[in-house]
Amino acid sequence: MGTPNKNNNATGRYRPGPAEGRDRVSVLDAVLKALLPVTRRIDAITTWIGRHLAWLILAAVVVSSVNATVRKIFDTSSNSWLELQWVLFSIVFLLCSPWTLLANEHIRIDIVNNMLPKRLRDSIDVIGHAFFLLPLTIIMIITGIPFFLRSIEVNEQSGNAGGLPQWPSKALVMIGFTMLLVQGISELIKRIAVMRDLIPDPHATQVHALEAEVEHIVEAIEKR
Image (cartoon, rainbow, N blue to C red; front, side, top):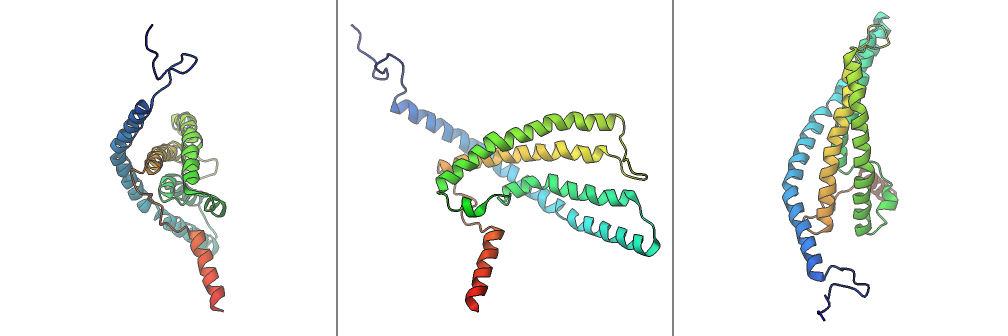
């Protein structure tokens, strides 16, 4: 009779041994290490785009102020200028969202989140990115492409007299969510690498704006 395989359980089914499990982990670590330079490049591009496009908020404020001033003083206005400020804000909102994700400044319930163990917070981030963020971005890209193509095919214009063409605004949807998808993949890779102790947590010493505000309020109360 043959010698039973130590990796077979009582039912005769194959069960991976400790050595094989360690091999799989080492392969995962090797893949993560190979992908980390890619994430750094993605992060650099996201940061560059975000820092430059954020100035469009100022442009939107200027356009809005000039439009309001001209309307009050000269009793005239233009729908194109009104829609332009909407487009500028849309550019910042959609194309800077990857930068917000990179900076870990997206909306979360900080009070509850900070009370959880770090390992659990990391697991929540991985699950959230893999099963909620990335599928959402893929759906928005798939639906956003024909949304844009139909608009540019007919050269869709604004429904308001003297307004702007609509297809550039609709292009922002697929562009913004494509950028968010790429940054989401980068964040997922980095978070798994943090859990594998391959890199330090880039947000370990980060203080959120809400936390900083609470600290200032507490300090002000204590000084009274």
